[in-house]
Length: 193
Ligand SMILES: Cc1cc2nc3c(=O)[nH]c(=O)nc-3n(C[C@H](O)[C@H](O)[C@H](O)COP(=O)(O)O)c2cc1C
Image (cartoon, rainbow, N blue to C red; front, side):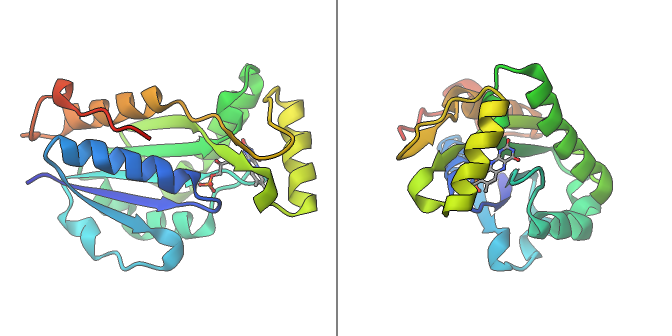
C-alpha cells in the first residue's frame, strides 16, 4: 500500500483540518496515511518509510512555525527522494491583492530555501480565523494586516476562506506523481466537511 506522510504544524487548527481532509482523500484512493503533528514533538521514524510526503504549515506574523523548520532541516534530504508537496496556509492566500499573495509566497520560498528542501510542488491554501480564540492584541493584529491586504474577515466568530477544491486538486496532483499509485486520481472520493 502506498504510504503517504502528512506532517504539519498548526496553531489554531486550520492546517490540521486541511491535512485531515487530504488524508481522507488519500485513504479513499487506497493510500495508507500517517498524520504527524510536528508541534507535539512526534518522532521522525515514519519519514524513511513513506512513498510520498506532504508537509504543511501556517503563517503567523510573516513567519512559519519553528518546529516545521526544524523538521525540514532534519529530514529535507530524505523527503527529497519521494514525490512531495508543501502546503502553505495563510489568510493572504485569499487576498485580491497580488502583492499580498506574493509576500506570503516569498515567506514560504524563503523558508524552503533556508532549510534546503525543494518540494515538487508548493501550494498556497487560504486558512481560517476564529476571533473569539484570539486575545485582543492578536485580533487587532489580524484585522489590521488583513484589511491592509484586502482580505475581508467577520468581526466576530469564525471566517473560513479555505477553498476545498484547491485542496482536492492538490491531492489529485500529488497522487499522479506517486509511482504505482493505488487508483486513478479520478476515483478520489469527495469528502464532505
Ligand atoms: C496572530 C495571527 C497572526 C497571523 N499572521 C498572518 C500573516 O502574517 N499573514 C497571513 O497571511 N496570515 C496570517 N494569519 C492568518 C493565519 O495564517 C490563518 O489564520 C491560518 O489559517 C492559521 O492556520 P492554523 O490554524 O493551522 O495555525 C495570522 C493569524 C493569527 C491568529
